[in-house]
Image (cartoon, rainbow, N blue to C red):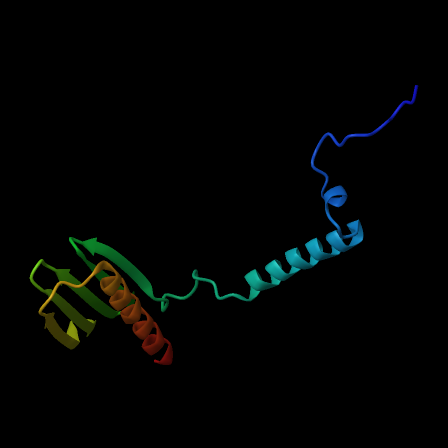
Length: 133
C-alpha cells in the first residue's frame, strides 16, 4: 500500500500565497510605510494659525447653507429651494462691513446635485481667493 503525506497550512501565510518572494514583500511594505510617513509629514496641518478657514455646511430644508470664516472675514451662501423656485444668497463681510450682498432667483427648483455643485464651487472659489490674500 502506498502512503501519501502532505502538509496543510493552518492559517493565511502571505509569503506562501504570493507569487512574489518574501524579500520583495518586505521591501514593498517598508517602502509603502515610508511613503505614507513622508506624505503625512509634508501635508499642511489643519491645526495651525488662526488664519485658517473654518467651513460649516448645514442642510436647510431642500437647500444648504455654508458659512466660511477666516479671522474677521466671513463668507456666507444660502441656497433655499421651494417647489416653485430657488433663491441663492451670497454675502461677504469683514468685521461688520458687507463687501458683497447679492441674491439671485431661479424660476425652477434646483436639484440636490445642483445644490451640492453650487456649494462646492463656492467653497473652492473662497479657498482660492483667501489663499491669494
